[in-house]
Image 1 (cartoon, helix red, strand yellow):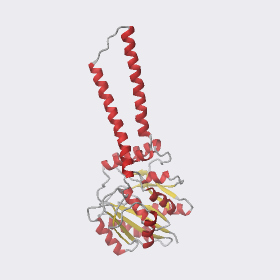
Image 2 (image 1 turned 90 degrees about the horizontal axis):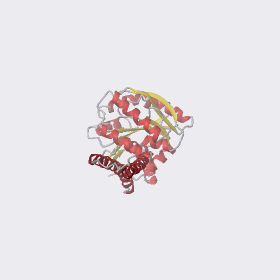
Image 3 (image 1 turned 180 degrees about the horizontal axis):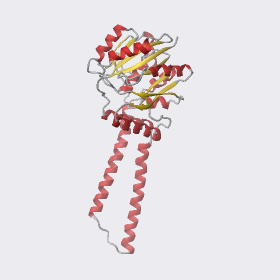
Image 4 (image 1 turned 90 degrees about the vertical axis):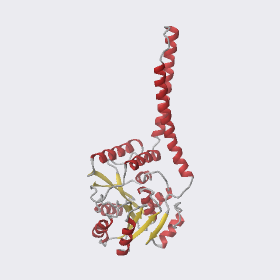
Length: 327
């Protein structure tokens, strides 16, 4: 019998966890056509999320818990969940129940047909207007400038084969996007479609600063457009400056037009200085990411884990995921 591992990143979700258990128990755990395990990854929550997860573990041994030492971000939490999974295929869902759990069954059926990657594409979402604008803009830009096979509307939820999991966990990239990595692997994804629900319980910790970081990380990790843009901008400005210089010199010597303009000079200096700072900022982003990778720090550090079998822990050690030891 096939086994599905369901990864759930948890960050300030203490109010959602009891409802999450009820929903999983009704729609997933009660099924007899496959085995399932739920790996909840506490991503440094400072509320009672971890205590609530321990209560779930007491209720049902199929719930396994990985507690990270601090908040590493949802994408890293998902990656750590994959590393600790033992299923034949694995997926992830959000703890806030915005994805209908029925899509897990739909993706599993696609996987049984032989697809190594199945993605759940959002055909619509019940979020607010500003959230829709940011999300649609992000995925449109990613599709156009970074990952051409990014589906319209994007996706957060996906199911992958165990072999694809091995590829993702070996990458051990920081400052990246796991959905981008899934598409980057090159496995042709099967697609299902769903409507993302509005969050009913609790308050999202997906802040504007985190959205901006994801936007920057995604483009830096999967696109050369930022660095190509500043190179093109430099060429254009150089050509414009050269032509302007030729024009001024010609006017001076042919028509005896005096070269004037302290104001013009200052405006030019300020514009060029701003462009230089922008250029240095983009280069600095690339350099920082390169430096962050070369330090070879662990992608995440596991503080505690519960229910992870010995075979999986041996697998993690063998694969060398650059994670810190359990402390």
